[in-house]
Image (cartoon, each protein chain N blue to C red):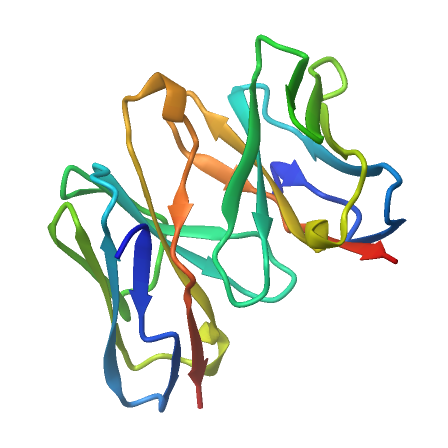
Length: 116
Length: 111
């Protein structure tokens, strides 16, 4: 497989459930991101991991918990979500520190999450 | 406070004509600007970028223009093709590498 792979593609969960989103990148990049895309809103950056260290936590509620066990894998653990958390969750990777790659993110296809 | 604004939610253009997508920004600390394209059920893909030290960058049918004094950039697609129908996101990168996205503009190419 190449690129950035996200699983599952679709997820429906109740407010009391615990679930995890998974992301894997096969590009050899050193940074990984979680973005949230809600209807009629810009892509919102949630978390950034650079060299497996979390460098940004964009005021995200604690019911979202990221995990980056190595440079190729990223998880987003979900618990006690609210209906307003329903959105498309996108994972991305990039090669930081490379002048020719500045700002170039490689996205997965996303997980469409519905919270009932 | 929206730092990157795409004021047109949608745009329809005849096939073969020029498509012009616009983007405004408010933060003068942005040093790099990018356009991403998104098809339904897929993640955004990088399309073209421009450094703040330039005013134009061209790649095939796609050209990005940057007007720093107006804090405005635009993406020109010519000629427009059916496969160009997608949502286009304008994005800006700060010197600390944080990337800010606009809300996107949905482009419809009409036959």
